Length: 131
Image 1 (cartoon, rainbow, N blue to C red):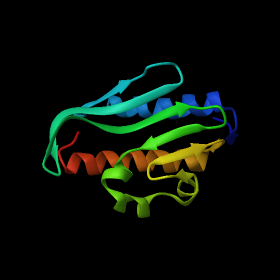
Image 2: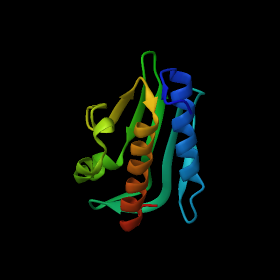
Image 3: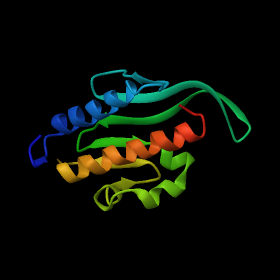
């Protein structure tokens, strides 16, 4: 990957590659889903109980190719808000709302921060028996 990618299709491809890598993690219950070539989601397909509620699956992360950016949805922040303090500075600056990051460019540093966030999310989901 070049030092900085501003092409939204290239950003989408890079992030989808990261998510696909997580789908193949040994012992993971993550499954990828896509409705179109503009989106991709990872879901943990496993019966879990969260706050006393039975769930058959749990969203983990996803991407959407939008008109002006690639939206990266990182659900661990929603269920475990304390993770926000562990995110990289460049990634945190892109946060819009509770769990959505808007990416208009992607460099090596930001890609590393996203990979670290995903790994942190997997670790925390795994500790809770969610993946």
